[in-house]
Image (tube, rainbow, N blue to C red):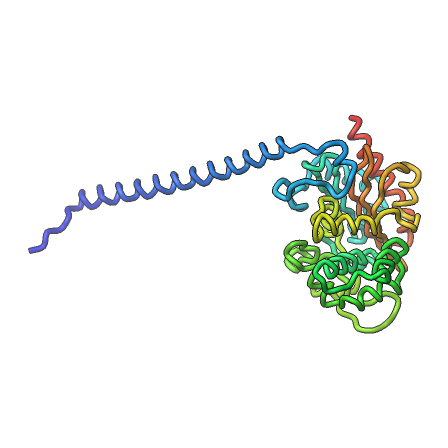
Length: 336
């Protein structure tokens, strides 16, 4: 006859088993927490040990190891967001536009590049951005050159500069024809860049030539032919400043193409007066009531990215007033 374990023995065995399993789970959780703490501490120590010299701070792209850089969406800063909200609320027209999703702003404070700060208004709202998305064409062309797909001829170099500095539509269309719209979409969705993210409300998109008819391929989310979000444009400039677009050498080439803008309106009109010594890297766009501007400002005291996307007949003046207010707020916080 088979013996059976008594009820008290079974209960005691059950309690021991539960206790053992619980202890094991606690041990694993503590080990994982400790591991994360060690990793975070190591990252903080590595950041503290790394320093950017005055000379390296004055030259772009920055020479910061990728391991010390955080993705843009991890740089959201409550204090900077509060400052931006205050600027928005100070103008009832801006507040109304933002509420109607007709004004988007992105701001990255890079005065301390190892601890950059990000804030935005409607930062993930994808809108028609006119010529601003030509930066997507530029990145795609530089990537194609680096990959050996596109030959870097004098004509190509001239067209890339015309496309950005003067926003020349004919030059842009020639560049689009050289690489193809499918290639532009592929590069924007490349995991290295995430400049158009279907899971994160889109971003930069070029699906039509500029200044002529022809094939049109709207973006997959809103079917916009020339689209942008403030966040993804900020990401473009943030990665550019840190040498993460294609390579540090190619990022430097993109900076050279985008530097010394030849159209002095919107943001640049104000920067010419308040920060004439700063280096300015810029791409803007306007069509009918849609006005867009984006800039990377790099000077002794000024190091920031600002993006503005607005749908209003007063967009030109709005952009001028916006950068004036943002610049003043950043300078005041520096001196506080």
